[in-house]
Length: 134
Image 1 (cartoon, helix red, strand yellow):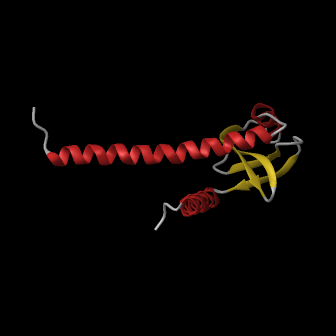
Image 2: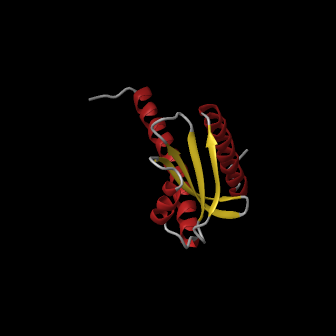
Image 3: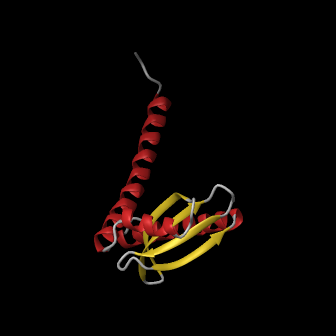
């Protein structure tokens, strides 16, 4: 069976794009694993603390991150009676509440866009450091 050269080229391009995406995914997981190793409070413990501040809530997103120089578990919690999300930051070393903020759908979209922009910048900075960019 003969394959058309463009078919082969398309398959290679798709595979390459998938592997590049995997690289970014793996880098993010490595970064999170390093941060989790620094945490004294487990994700499960932090979830319980955060949910205790939002009765009836359910966690939609969770991550560990450095926020303003502090290692925190960040939880986006939805409640059945609202489109707003309550973001609860739990100190990953002490278990204390760092902040509780309500975010409207508009604020959530803005934050996601800012996060994506920051992630792209961080990725570009990493490429610059490795000499892969430009």
